[in-house]
Length: 260
Ligand code: KIV
Image (cartoon, rainbow, N blue to C red; front, side):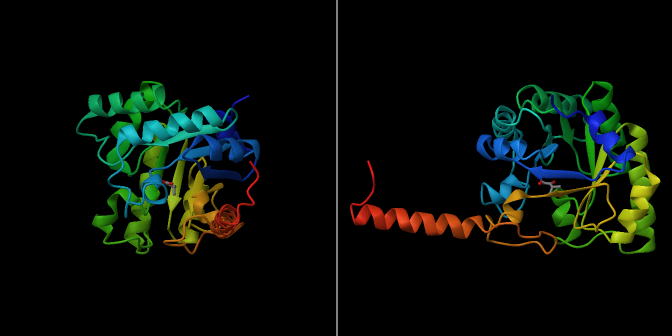
């Protein structure tokens, strides 16, 4: 049976840490699903690790839907969350935002959506949840605002920023979000937020005190070599394995030793 948002929320109540990985295609989703990962995120990080863009900003809703539908065909057990890409949701256009989220759910086959932003996004969260669309929030270093931040910098360093982020987390929870990603923030702030809200926090570069952890699987498995985030532990070196296999293939072809 597929994991639901209720299951994910109960994991926090039961004190069970929540592993979350990104997935962008049928084959990887099938592998991660069969490994028992309870929640998969079709992140707009696919803009970088799959499409080679330098940020998530060029990612469109159509791209997200195409990738999410492939993930949905591969993963039968995990909860699937799809990122709403840059400028597809706004408190200034709730009907348009809802139309986009509904497309992400129906055409993409996701069970929930993720949006970036704090208290300003409360009307969007309420609109989506009111229409039956579960929402995961995202605070801290929200990559769609990378130009506003002036780079991929740790967020929530000053006392004011910390108080604001706590208020944002409480506001997202009150608006009906079922979980919140905390990206690139100090560990003690992540701990404080995790203790202050009942819904799970899913950390990435936010220390060990979050209720769950999310990572881009290309980083964990050593597939993406352009940049390796400090917070990503290496569990495999797949790029090296693939390169060696490709070289072996090429030399077999040249030596005419390839079997049929
Ligand atoms: O796009 C993404 O993969 C994400 C995670 C890194 C949280 O938003």
